[in-house]
Amino acid sequence: MQFKKVTPYLIGATVGVGLTLGGVAVAQVPGLLHGGAMLQTLMAMGLDDEQKDALHAFHADSESIHDEMRELHEQNFEIVVDQLLAEEPDRGLIHDLVDNGLLKVSTIAHGRIDAFLDIHATFSPEQRQTLVDGIEQVRSERIAFMDDLHDRMREVHGTHGER
Image 1 (tube, rainbow, N blue to C red):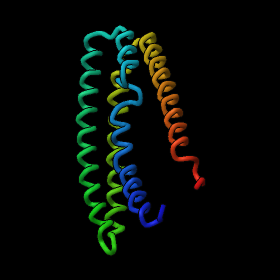
Image 2 (cartoon, rainbow, N blue to C red):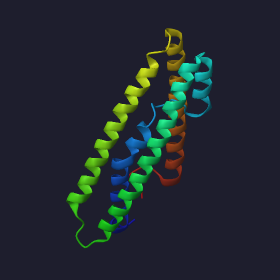
Image 3 (cartoon, one colour):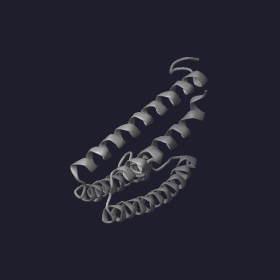
């Protein structure tokens, strides 16, 4: 693969990661409401109506934040593409996009953590243990999935450095 073909992809991927990966990933507490396992965990926690309402509101806010971050990513992506087409891309502009994106992600992440910890404060010790058990299960499943994915990718693409 030629360097000229790879460079725009790497730049785009790097900027994309810097601007949105965190925002999309941290819009929810990792593992919370992730697939059937976490839904089963929440059901097993014996939540009262107030706790259920709080989690539903948390989830709705998370979806809204996710949509907002996706829109920001699209806007920033267009700016980066325009800059990559320029004879001399505006480095300052691209760096500002990354810095502003990281600040936004950090602000959102801290807000989401606080919102979840407010809900967490209403959980009994038994509910907290059930939650942690479920999160550990989801984490274990996610690690197994990612390990399998990486193995399959290595089969297709080889390891780094192979030609």
